Length: 247
Image 1 (cartoon, helix red, strand yellow):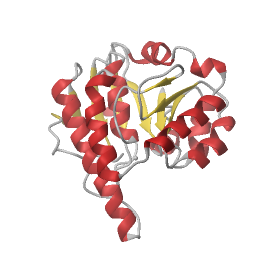
Image 2 (cartoon, one colour):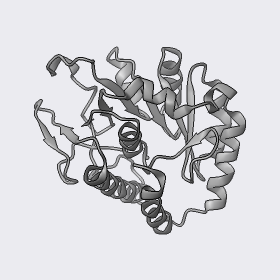
Image 3 (cartoon, helix red, strand yellow):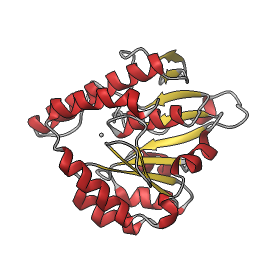
Image 4 (cartoon, helix red, strand yellow):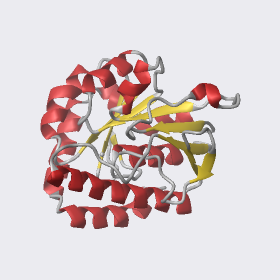
């Protein structure tokens, strides 16, 4: 999906949460200033080389889901590509799986994302109005290949191909660069961790938008989207058949 097709959806999200676009722009400028030159050079082309024509398995953090059981899948050629949404990088590394790509806004266990980056994962760091401090602290510590994204029109060195949370943003990225099919593992839009009721309600509201974002992508994108169930079966994503988590 191209940015002009996504922008109206993000305007609805921004209005729902009252996001200050000036802060989004400030976060984007900060991220650009911290990314090395190589990270600001042809980010989509570098991601495309990892994903185009491949099956993309997106790993989320649904409670109890754990790492994707790749041994259950039939042999695919070429092999599927793992994309970890934020803290799912820690789940993957714990199972001996190194994601090809990690998509993060730096609100999870960032040291595990740095470890994955050191072991070859391309990390797509997303800047938004609420994570300026995290961008400032963590971006200089990544040792490997990076790309940057933000919530506004694509600009030199920063991409935006759609998506709101780390999970649905991963799917939009995979679709945009030509993944053959997209498979969701460990996604749950109906449950959110946390003891604070207000924060949990906010997370659930974000997950509701993520569900809708993926429904939009499934309807208008080029790559079919499937949910990989714990019993090993798959079903086309329809917005209601989740085992799914995301920003």
